[in-house]
Image 1 (spheres, rainbow, N blue to C red):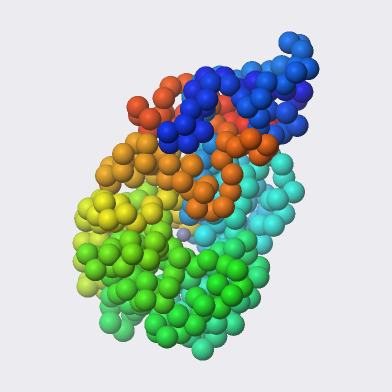
Image 2 (image 1 turned 180 degrees about the vertical axis):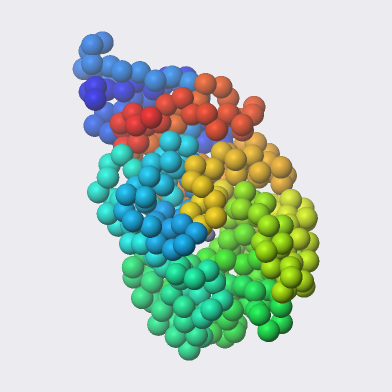
Length: 363
Ligand SMILES: [Zn+2]
């Protein structure tokens, strides 16, 4: 590694702020030209520069069958990194991925510890499966194991009614979310259907994953309360597949899923118009492969975000929401370099030229 890395081109520090030069010294970013940088020890990268992308819904340590081994988790995180995702909000994992923090070459992870699910109302081998009377205690335990987030499964198919149904009574949720906040953690929840969104908003949630069941009323509540959503449109694309798998036994559920899928862009577009904060997340790890963050940004554009807004949902905006720095003086140099301007075509995000993590060129 050379002593100084010179970053040149169009450095997109914020949605409205550009610089044309920066330096990386000792892994940290600075906009002040170093005095003693001799020509021989300077390596340079140039192009269009963004802060390391954020995948705000990603599962390192999980595959379709449950927890994976450490090697596989490292492969997953490497794939995310090579796609430019240098900060991951891990939305629940049965594997304790704390060891990833020892790997300088792997993305930074903000963990939600384990999913909290209702008994027999989630994918087997993934969550802590409990009943409502255990919710408050379980939330406290998971809050202490994570990095400031708790993840609940908010709704799932109910085999008796044959449709999506909320997993928790509102009063229990309200107490559980208050407990998480007391522990210093924010709460998010997997919600596909309509009713769970009303319940979680009433109970004071901070965020919702997927949020396909948003309607005019719940959009209003989300906007008023500043509840963020991470739609994971690349995974919503699979709803017709989920519907087909359940159609023989649960036709109502199947029709419901197809309806949610058909109006997905309209739903997310309406939330955006109303001012609901939206962030880019892929849901990699369960059904989907890792490394899809660029594809999700393109999906957010399809839902009605401008290219600049969609980029912000995976960079500046997402980092501010998660309390992490972007391209800021003195902070870790976590950045991605592209050949052409992603603001003109977000498709560019799929082909990073160089990736710099903790000041080191890693790809
Ligand atoms: Zn997920």
